Length: 311
Image (tube, rainbow, N blue to C red):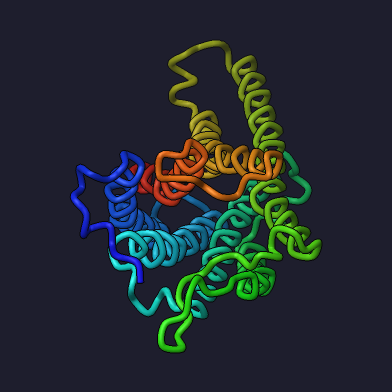
């Protein structure tokens, strides 16, 4: 069995492990607080947001809370502090990894759905009554949750035990054929394309179109009203558009920036075909862990902003 890192002197650990042991507990605490606060505040419906937007944001906060609980707390924090619990029995570990991928997919695709909703609301006036409604938001959320749970079921069968003690299999490691079998290679590539590559591309495109439309409309309004800065500051329509841009980038812009490192590192691993790290000081391991830490920060950054903006 593997000993927890707490049995070693903290100062004797490599800097990467020291950072991880401090970082993930902090993210766990603030991630739970930020997402629970967002759910409570947005559920009250007194934030000046439409019921459609509120539904998307509550669903996103719920999915992010699941990721914090499953990935950050039960997987990463548990891995470094309590690596001998039943959660690391191979079957339980594989099931947990499956749920982590499902919750992550749901969170990111809800971000895409929210971005698309804002794009339609601002840029497609003929479609807004059909698309930007509470019923549509509820249907999208209802479909995404079971859809991505089913999509990630193959992850459960992708792992094998690291070792067996008293007929009990422990820990999850990729099966050897995961790196060579065409079916598993295809599955992992489809997984990365669906999350995060496709959402990143679509969110970037929709954000660019939405912001361009808001800027053009705001400029035209300023021309009609005259270039009076005082009037602009007290124009409710300009304030509403400014709030739309802030909300949009707080949710989706944050997603793009923090997933970028992870995507670049994944592509680099595929190009170099290097999947094993030599030590805790290996630059590839440092890059890998940094990408995951940035993803973990995404789970609380947008919700901290929304909470502070809504209170």
